[in-house]
Structures are given as C-alpha cells and as structure tokens.
Amino acid sequence: MNDMTVRILESLAEVSAEQWNALSDGRFPFVRYEFLRALEKYNAVGELYGWYPQYVLIEEGGVPVAAAPMYIKDNSYGEFVFDWAWADAWHRAGLHYYPKLVVAIPYTPATGPRLLVHPDKDFDTYAAQLIEAATAHAQKTGMSSLHWLFTDERDTQQFQNDSRYLMRLGCQFHWQNHAYRDFDDYLSHFTQQKRKKIRRERRMVAEQGVEIEIRHGDEMEAEHWDIYHRFYRNTFERKSGIPTLSQDFFMEIGQTMPRNVVLVMAKYQGEYVAAAFNVCGRDTLYGRHWGCNRDFHSLHFEACYYQGLDYCIQHGLQRFEPGAQGEHKISRGFLPVPTWSAHWIAHEGFREGLTRYLDHEREAVEDYMQELDTHSPFKRSA
Image (tube, rainbow, N blue to C red):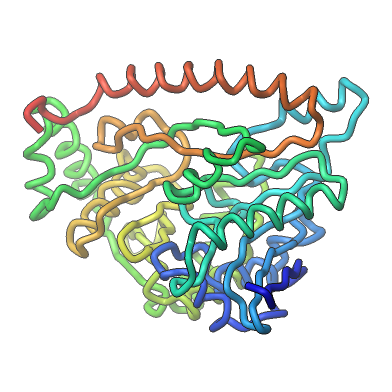
C-alpha cells in the first residue's frame, strides 16, 4: 500500500465503467457505474437538487482498488434517514448544519454496500482506509457531519468498531424466500384469514378486467417509457413531491442495465393504467416507484407486492425490499428488519446530545419492531 493515493472525484466520468464496477461483486445494482453515472448525466444529482458528487477513490499504482459514493448535501431531501430535527437544532444554536456529507445512493433507501473494495483486496484493510479518507475530507472541508446511510451488515460492522461514529437504528419491511415453489405454496404458510384476504385481492384485480405485463429494460419501447414516466410524475405531483428522475434517466438504465430493470405494467381495455418500477440485483428485488392514472381496487397491492413476490419465487431471488416505511406490508409477508446508518458529528456538544438521543431512539425502534412481529401473517409453525 506504499503507492496508495486518495482522490475525491466530482464525476464518475473521471474513471471508466470497468474500473468502478470491478470494485463490487455485482450483487447490489445501485452502486453500478451505469446507475450512478446516469444520475449525473440527467441532473438527478448536482446543483439542481443539492447532491454534489464527491466520490472517494483509492488507487494503487493508478488502479482503483476501493471507493465510496459520497456527496455534499445542502439539504436532506432524498436520503430517507431523517435528520431535519438535527438541522433545526443546529440552526437554533446559531450554527450551520449544511453543507454536510453523505455516503448514500440518492433517492434510494435500499440496504447495500457503501464501502466498495476490490474482491482481490483485504476488505477490512481497505474499508478502514475509505472511512479514514472520507472522515478526513469532512474535517478538511469543514463539514458539520458525515453520514453513511443504509449500510449492509459487513459495512455496519466496520462502523460499530469505530468509536468516532454514532450508530442509528431504523426499520423497514422485507420479504425472505424460504424456497417457496410458487405463490400458492407461499400463501399456504399464512393463517387462513390472511391467506383468504390476499386471494380475494388478487381475484378482484382480475375480475375488474385488469391485465398485468412484466417488462424488463430491453423489452421497453420509447412509448412504454413515456407512459411509465407520466405515472411516475403523477405520483409525486399528487403528493407535492419532486420527480427528480427524468424519462431519459429511466431509458438509459433500461438500455445499460436491461435485465436489472423490471416493470410491472397494468393494462385495462387496451390502455396502460398503472406501473410499478423495480430494480433487480443478483439475489434481491427492490421496489422503487409506483404510479397510475385511475384507481382499481387492490391494483396497488397486486402491482407493487404480489407480482414482485411472484417474480422473486419464479426467478429464485432471496429477498424483496419494497421500499421505505409501510406497516400495511406486514400482512402481505414483509416483516420488520433493522436498517443501520453511521454518523460522524464534528461538534462535540452535539455529538454528546445525539449519543443520548440515539440510545433512546434505538430502544423505541426495538420495541416497535417487537410489537410488529406479533402481527405476522404466518402460521406459528412457519
């Protein structure tokens, strides 16, 4: 490691797709060069929405060996680990919380690797170097804080062993595949009441005359993307949100990541009326966006959950992460699981206060998850 150098990149255009993608095992699609670079190219990150790329890159002999997708943020939009109250506390103390640094996948609350280390290198050694490089950059640039969001189990262990970082516990609802043969086999593990409810919901979608299509990225024509993106925009506009991802962004990853992109499209009387956008990893399906132009009873559950579950079973995927929040997912077999983030805080006084806050919050989240477990739809024997 004598010839090791650290660079901070303001664009992935400074490295090649082959160099960047070699730093991960390909299991988690959102750290792929094609996805992150498309966010840049179509202004989902940058000045417009306050995500300024600061990718950490470690090289040996000019060859990338480790990296982390880091950004300067001047807001907290699109992170899904909510720290608005933290920013308010800084402001009331006469200090500035923004800008800050985050290591995250923009607009994507999916657990996965943030410490990208070439498979031929020792993970612990280079992960420690990445954390050190990112933390040093935060200190050098005078950032209030540095946040690593939705870290996977291996990354989380690195931060739990680093006393400079505070750990924050969250909760999502994920599905696990226990070698189900088909959807009926899956439902056979439910209690009778829950099983009947799901079958009734699926039957109602069919009885309304709604047909379902599954399309991968390479099966989408320009007209399909146009229809889908209208649904996508409608969802954000109804909720007073910001549709940050352009149609060109979706079309590009549909071309560059064709089998990772999975759309569930619903058609009624020859017209598309709804769509759910998913991204598929090596062993996990990630539900991301939903939109429609008219309401049908239970169609949201069919398109966003049941079709995804069926897809996972048919393709041997081990997990389905349908997105952030949503206690209604429990009755459909998505059970509470912990999520983690790690936080470096520059101000010692705020660090001490947040330590106490996070301890109390963790107890509350643990109690919450235990309570939710009692609402599992599965038979006790399952």
